[in-house]
Length: 116
Image 1 (cartoon, rainbow, N blue to C red):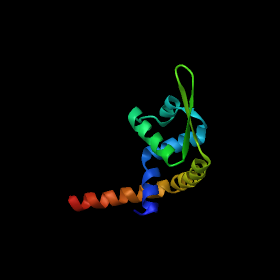
Image 2 (cartoon, rainbow, N blue to C red):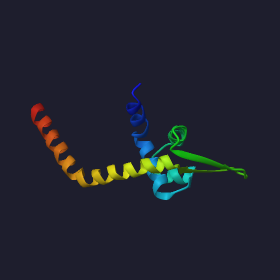
Image 3 (cartoon, helix red, strand yellow):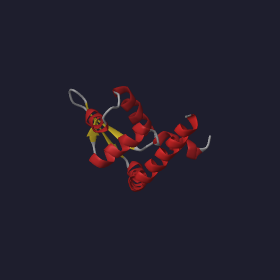
Image 4 (cartoon, one colour):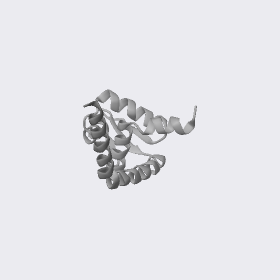
């Protein structure tokens, strides 16, 4: 398997990007805090996403022995380095978003004209 394809597939899904961005922007967060920051993610999907990010060394999970147990997530050094790249991408998307939307609308119009 191509390592680039494998890594990009893992980190480029919507939920991974939002989890990394949430932890990068707010620091240590508990599960429900992160879930709230992300928004419309299910508990199951967030759990799977966090496990995958932890397995890849991008986040750490710290469990505090108290009742009820408290668990916090935060980016590792590797996760912070990825966050820097995501910020560059977000800046690019913000800058070029209007142009991309223009071309999408133009392409949609061409498709509609072909159908009509």
